Every structure is written in C-alpha cells, then in structure tokens.
Image (cartoon, rainbow, N blue to C red):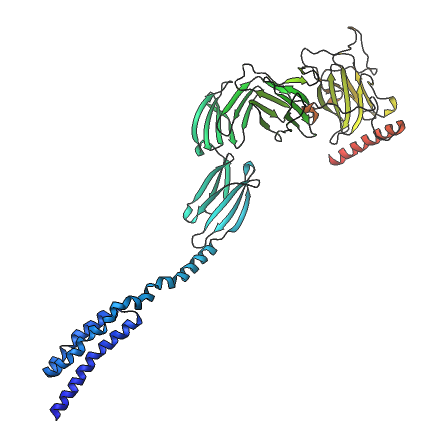
Length: 524
C-alpha cells in the first residue's frame, strides 16, 4: 500500500512539474510576447523529462513523458503568431503621435523671436530674429526700403558668421546676432577684367554677383577711387571733363569733353534726341521730347547731392545735381555736349538766356538773367521766392519812394550790372554783374561805342559778384543751376505786391525787409 501510494504521489509530482512550463508558454503566446517565452518554455520541458528517471520508476516516467512532449503541441499556435503579434508590429505606429508631438514642440521652439532692427550704410536695413532653443541661432533679413534683398544665418549649426553682398555692401551677421555692413570690395568679389581709361587711369572690374559689379580706379599704381554698380549704374566724374560709367552687368562707358551747363530749356544730342530740362522748385530734371508733338516722356531728377545716369535710346546722359550734364552716344562718329535747341525754329540755338542767383542781403536773392535782348533782374525773398521787384531795359530802376534802391546800370551795354541797397542808414549797397552770353552770341540794342552810361549815384560798376562793402556769395540753389526762365513779369520796374496801391507798395516793401531782418536776427 505504501509502495503504491509513493508511486502515485511521485507520478502526480512529476506530472505537475512537467505541466507548469506548458501553461506558462501558453500564457506567453496569448500576451503577444511569444519569442522570448518560447525559448524559455522549451528549456524547462527538456529539463523536466529526465527528472522522473532519477526520482520515480521507469513506467511512471514514461507515462509523464507524453505530457512533457505535448509542449510543442501547445506552441503550435506559433504558426499563427503573426495574427497574434500584429499589434506588436504596429507598435511604432502607436509611438508615432509622441514623435509628432516632439516635432511640434521643436517647431514651436524654432519660431521667430524678433531681436532688433539695424539701420545700415547704403540705405540698407537688417531685421534680426532669434530661433531655436537647444541650438539657438540668428537670422537677418536684409532690405532696401520694403524690398527684401536676402537673408543671413549664423550661430547654432550655421557657423560663427554669415556674409552676403547687397547693393554694393558686404553685410555680416555673427553668432551673437550682431549685424555690420561695409562697402563691398575685391575681397568679396571675382576679378573680371582691367580697362585703361581715356584720362590715364586704370579700372579693375570685379563681379560681386549678378547685376552687382565693383570697380577700383588707379592712377600710376595708386588707388584714387572706386565705384559700386548694384542694381543701377554708377558714375565717376573727373574734373567735369572725363566720365566713367559702370553698369550693374559689368559693361562700361568712358568719354570726355561733352559737358554743358544744365539750365531750363531744350537740348539736342548728336543722335537727334531732344531733351527738355525743367526746374521744379528743388532740382532740375530731364525728359525726352517728341519734336513733332512736343510730348514728353516724364521728368527724371538727380539724386540729392549726387549724379544720375540716364539712358535715352543709345544715348548715355549723366546729370549732375550741381547744374551740369553730359551726353555720350556709343558708336557715334562724333561726340558733342548737349546743344541748346529752339523748339520754334527746330534748330540748335547757342544763344539762349544765361542766369545766376546772388544773395544781396536782407534775406533777398537777385536772379540775374542775360539775354540777347538785354538784362533782366528779379528780386525775390530767399526761401519762398516771393517776388519783390522786376527790372529790365524798359524799367531799369525802382521809383525813389520804393523804400529800397535797385537799378540796372549799363542796361544797353554787353556788361550790365545791378546796384542794390536794401537797408537804410549807413549800410552800403552792392554791385553785381550779370552773366555773359555764350561765346559767339551778341546782345541787341547796344549803345554806340564810346557813349558813357552813368549810374546816377557815383558808384562804378563791376564785372564780378563783389558787393561794395562786403563779399557776396553765389547761392547753389534753384535757378543757380537750373537757369529757369523768369515768370510773367507784371509790374516791371516796381515793387510787386498783389492788391496794394503805390503807397502800400512802399510800406509793404519796407515792412517786409524789416521783418526779414528781424527773423534772420532771431534765427541767427
């Protein structure tokens, strides 16, 4: 009985030991982690089979063996494991939202954070932004006005600094977000060619980028100048005689000897192009004109205090804000300065009126114009150009009760002068010469040779702009450079004040001059 009991217990014990790994393996497949538990389950099954041989009779051990050897049968579902493990293969998809969230966070941290706006030379502006958190870097958007020229990046993975050439300036952004700009030079460019200029200088041309070229000018090996043509032509003007134009595409023009004073009126170029110059109150501009219809193309004005290059057909025109301009027609057999042109006759007329403006004191400017029919003088207030008086041959002086003295001496000579005394008391008047007509032009109605023309006050006339009792300077403004025609000259020879009688004219003149003097004293 005891032997039978021990045998039954041993058989049950062996069976229990063998069954545990099988159950464990089944549970593992159901959880979808079959690969690792499968290896673990097969090992215990093999280890459990010999155990009964050592602790129990051979027969029970053999009886238990089928239980152990059925373990592979329980792993049979492994052949269908793909279906059970499908969720495991989708695990990356399950983690995708987390990756997307990280990407969104990174994008959020990469958003622009404005840092500063920097005004640069050359009319450029740089708007600096900070980006990133772990790998912080900076961007700089470079603009001219509202036009975006490009972007720079520095810091983070973009390097210590970034430099670009914009409108002739090398702009640099560093890793700290600081922006600087200097005129671009050869160190930023690619050499293109070297040219010998008419006046003996040498021009070395460099390409900064498309439509952006740079030139260095040398004389006997010494650098004497440089030009940047960034998006628009640049010009070098040598002593009012030689011009060198560098175009944005690197082409050049070089000429000499075709400069003329820029005054209001019409001009003809050597290729037949007709130009009109007109003063707008601030500067003088140019436009082409159809000689048949008189219709213009629209006026263009020079840059303040500088030069402007204009193209009319083949003609290249350089316009100076100082009152001169020059023309060059590539390929023309003959070159010439712009010639004054008479639209009524359709012919070149070199004897057009000549004008200068002079400060004569008491806040007054004298606009002196010489024509073939004699001199004209207009006195205006400086700044607002209100007309005080107009004089000519028919009305050479103001009346005695005008309150000021102004007259043209030698009105019927080739060298007339204006005498003006605007302040009372011991103040001295001044004498001012009219400009001369161009060479070869004559003044009509001159007095017979040898006939003296007194000035009536004992003061002699002068051919210079030297005022008696002090030096008078020429004003580089308005009509000085422009030579604009005089406006309609109502009331010649009198003080001009709309809506006033003769007595009021005198009072208005004196009151105005006194006011101008007081204003000047306060501002001075």
